[in-house]
Length: 131
Image (cartoon, rainbow, N blue to C red; front, side, top):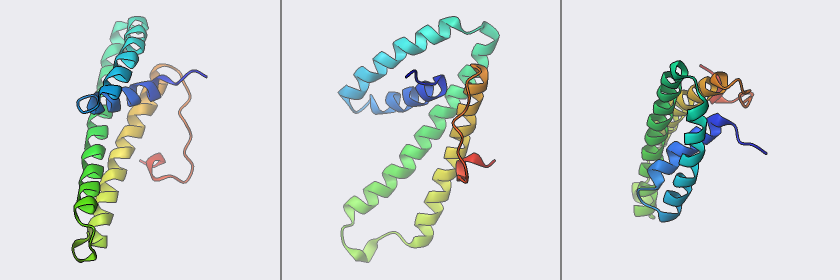
């Protein structure tokens, strides 16, 4: 089964971040970069700007999601006792921030799908499908 290009670019941006910390991710990112290079060679020059902008949006959204999730994990890892846990209001605020970034990410992936005339993955009754 062939992976959609939007999924490939999304995964690639995540692997680029992970590759700074993990050798296995670095190797996988190299494999993905070869696939990305082949795709880029087939894209008309005037569409490369759109693809570049979408990839930047994916990179930024994925980085922000990573930072938000890492902050939550760090706080719970460092605080195994009940006395300093995040308040529900703060957990909700962070969840909403992650959701907002996922909306941006989903829009960027849909734009890549449009660019390559691929069908976006439908999400029904899902917050990232709105907006």
